Length: 344
Ligand code: CO
Ligand code: CO
Picture (tube, rainbow, N blue to C red):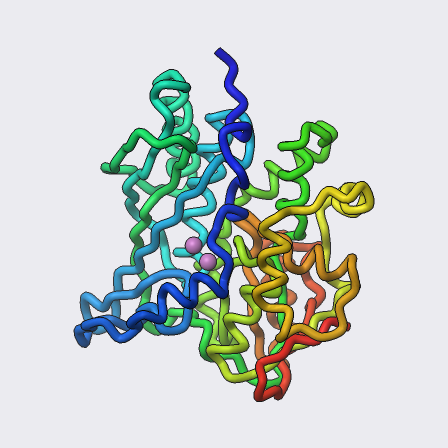
């Protein structure tokens, strides 16, 4: 049987995340739960992963990420979900080592072979990242879901948190935007094959470079762009660092084809939810830049905050690692006590 997995869901990939304002309401019930002294990064600043100290120099970094299908093919879905789950470890500057799988699907509607294919896809990506899947949990669920809880290690001095961005720092982004729009086009069966291939390629690219970038002292903050879009994740940095930001929109890259689908009015519900939840913080938008900048990404690029004196040094690092299209800064951190982001 050939199943089209996206037909079993409302919104796929990181587009199925709960909107940031609702999430904040849920999490705010008590952010200061009992924390022992070894917790280095907890849930106060919406960081990508939790960090727990196990020796003077080493900490364990842990995250969990799962979602509904963003593509129809089970193997590819497993690959994307795994690559996306690893990303939060890389975004903290950690090295992922082992993972547990979370799998749910409607056992009355889908054959068990679908589950096998999803796991095989995840394993292929984890093998590439040198990560072992060593356990997990499965449930019978109306919507298929898959993801991983990933654990890794990190040198304590390399941890990159959201709270340390400084006024004047420049912003870099390591992948183009638009995966959310392309996946909506896929769900509506309106996507061209070449654009589908580009979207998948983009989602499968591991953010491994985070391990290298975390070693740079002049990188003050780092996060990965996922369900809340570029604006949402940049806003998390602005709020935790008590700053604002501006975005140089003409420097923000999109995946080929994205603007054509926007012209056909193919936009994501998740993007709209994102925008509604943070629009009060954003200045200078129009229809086009608003849609692109709030588009939910799945395993999107790393947003890297770099001290202005080291911009040239950082560009060389990007070049050396073959990020040639991403060496221009896409924005800057500004003084703004209301944490506003202005799109230029
Ligand atoms: Co993240
Ligand atoms: Co996450």
